[in-house]
Image 1 (cartoon, rainbow, N blue to C red):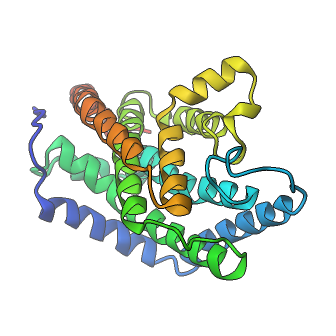
Image 2 (image 1 turned 90 degrees about the vertical axis):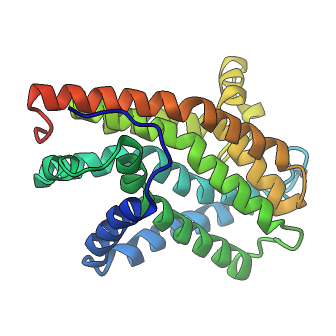
Length: 273
């Protein structure tokens, strides 16, 4: 019987799952190059689009000096958002398809260790790619990061990953029960990203969508990241709110995941896809 235990995860267990996923990704030599190239091409697209805007102020763009700076943060953070939200569902789906999920959950591993282990490598991989995108944007596309607070940037990124991982854990629970929860989550995250101010200000939205965007934790993540990178200050409130959101919702998501896994084990459907 699977038991839900909300305790500090054993780092060696989480690290073992992360190392396994790293070894799997490393076996595909072109994956990192292709993933990074796609992100750089997306940056270049918005860099040239920004050339058509000349009358936007930092106030319009939540502190970003240019539209490109505004959109670049959206692209960089979206990379991490997708990893934090979709990582667990995608990994579980792959485990089911390859037939390894049943063997994995039969090991002495807790719910929180399984979730953190499955999302660990995608999240770290996304952080690395995001760092590359910022370096490219700063060196080749004239993105001004002279006032950046890198401590604030790291704090907001970590808080964002924890807060948004709630959606990923819930998606994992849905995958265990109805098998294709990753598709539903992908659509939800895409919609929230658009209305939260990733590549255009929420003020440009209709009033009812603007209200939804202002309530989204993704907006806190985007606003905090922009404040840290372009102003070097005023990021603390966003990071704190994201941390509070994570503290309130992660236990609930882990409980839902534990119930879903228990149901799948009783139904004998853990390995089904």
